[in-house]
Length: 252
View (cartoon, one colour):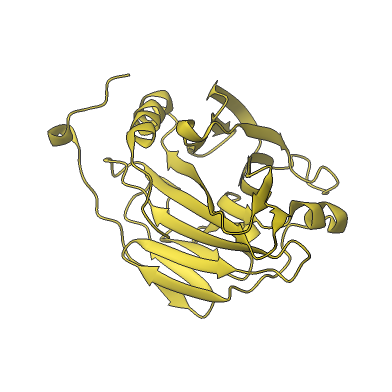
């Protein structure tokens, strides 16, 4: 699909992140999420919870770009929300950055950068999560998961690296990995043991499913966007084209 020319776009500047303790918040300047949802938030001591949305009634059951730092421990515990306080965090421009060093045998240090991604449209909001991992050991398992949870509904996968979710109500949600990184998304029902009749759908990207050696820095990128259901194939195709053409960040 041919992307619109730059002068055809409506550029909407992103609001800066602010800290309230270990909660990072960002005001939303679009109605793409749902009416009455004024801000996005990240609980930095619960990175697996990802980006949530504050202010809607009832709360909107969507979370984007959660970072699961130790998938094996999560499977053993059967939980997603273990507290992992960051060892450092800061705001840089439109980015919120947190450094995690879980006290586990992997000695894995992870830096997460959640950044607002320019969509060119006030009707669509998007974020990118850039994850970097390294270890102080000679070699260590580097697997982490980037997970987004969406309400049950139709899931369309235009490529193995992208999924477009159409919940039974509300806006559509796009999740994609960067095509140059040759990673795939997995789609499954989240926690089927929950009592809800319709458990949420988890869209997951397993980053770095390999051993990382000391001195090597691994980096991965995942995009998530929310926009209107009516023209979701058009705006999602445009975002995928632009994401594929975007240069990687130089640093975290």
